[in-house]
Amino acid sequence: MKKLILASNSPRRRELLEQIGVEFEVIPSNAEEKVTKQEPSEVVEELSRQKAEDVAAAVEDGIVLGADTVVCQDGQIMGKPKDEADAKQMLQKLQGEEHSVYTGVTILVKENGAVQHVQTFSQETKVYVYEMTDEEIDRYIATGEPLDKAGAYGIQGRFAAYVDGIEGDYNNVVGLPVSAVWQELKELL
Image 1 (tube, rainbow, N blue to C red):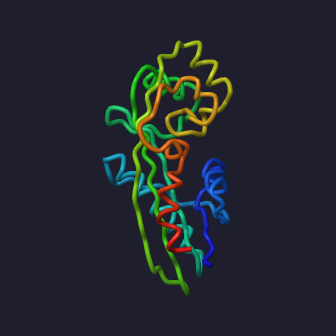
Image 2: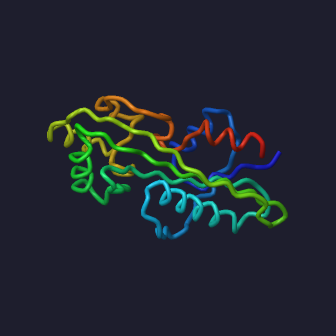
């Protein structure tokens, strides 16, 4: 059985892999993110591949899993907020509206120091958010939860109170479409 390496320090991605019973080790990527694409699905695929390739460069054997998640509304990509003011601006745009969450995944297999297989894909999930008052937004920001998350929210946390519904994979919004990942991994592990 090949070892699986998660090229991410995300506690949410670790939890999702643990949830489905996959054994893995964590080697976070230090790749400088370079975006050359415009489409959100292509951006996350490009970034996930950069992360997987960065970690794979230091691995002799194993399966490296890279992932990247963005929130997109009206063609505008929202990454992680720079600060509380940026988080507030993002949440004000998302409240009462629909947006999409894209997660790109790259699975890279190395054997004897050589890349044997690379699979890159992305998934989109639509998220509908209830209207929020400025007071509700401020209270949510005060929890600190939005500051390390794309789009300034975590669907699995306190923001759940404002989610009107989703279309697609819930886990994709958390940060990894774990069922799609498993469908790719089960043949490789």
